[in-house]
Image (tube, rainbow, N blue to C red; front, side, top):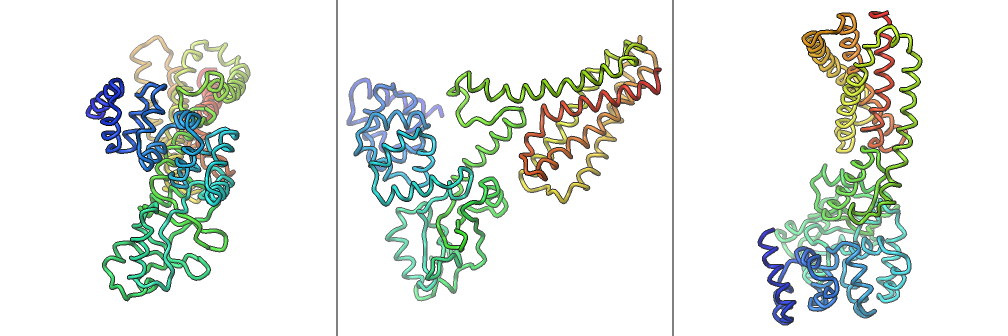
Length: 449
């Protein structure tokens, strides 16, 4: 990183000194991802100048790594011919990802300036649901016919492979373009030229359909350690592939969305510093209102047991520690269960095993916490033994129940086809708060009143 910063400073000095020929030579030898970072350091009024120093291929690849705001600024500054060059040089999936984040009027302008065939392809991709396989796949893959010889297949790869997203996995289709197998480049290289592709291909191919959810696809990549995955339509005709670089983006998006939901936020597609204050407030206020209103349940429970508090006002001092511990215990369980379901370690059919395990964990944690709490209150002194016993016993029961609630709610959400992430954090805490109060006051009735 430090080395890149030094290089960036040198390039900025060349830019300030108007040494454009030397700058052009140096930046065109740089990696596109690093160049995209360099453009963030270039003064806004000079970005277009530097961008035009890039070769056609480098310009398109660097453009694909830029953030959406910079991409839009550059497109608004270049000519229609330059727009056409950029979009035509981008891979289809990168072009679709880019266009999906732009305003409709900008998309219209761009699509007017691309080849008709490419425009049709992009429009078709834009019509797929946002989180589906069709929306993230590319049509730039290596397709071989089942009756090809190895020699013919290698000739085709040498001729067209430069334009493909990947050539390491080649997909075999029949005369109706139905996916019938897959053969790796390694297998082709090690086979004789006169062998048939159909004889050396793997016919047990893992594939997904165009409308399959991208989160499920990410799990397939992880399970089978894939670098590419074919996408077929309802008639099992090969229409595209998904590569691992696209799945890395999907995983980042899904993880970000889950973290936001677990923190009681509505998911946001924009970066934090580029999101308006009003939009951030809007994303937060909905859940804050829900949690605030649901918090009235705790108030109602306390009001319903006012005779218990009246008989021993000291009990009120222990309510926060009871509610906080219960909420933390429930959040621990829910986080583990949500993570387990996300990576495929836990299925709905495992519900009884999960409950039994969390019950035992809850008993162990509850006993330890209650004993430590009993000793702590005893050492500090000033608290009647029966009140101490009430608090400690309530703590143990609350932890056990909280662990059970924490594992059950995410699984219930999945059963009802909701995102389990919404059952984490603040929502679990709110539910557990009410339960802990009911437990506390009923135990107090037995030991204090």
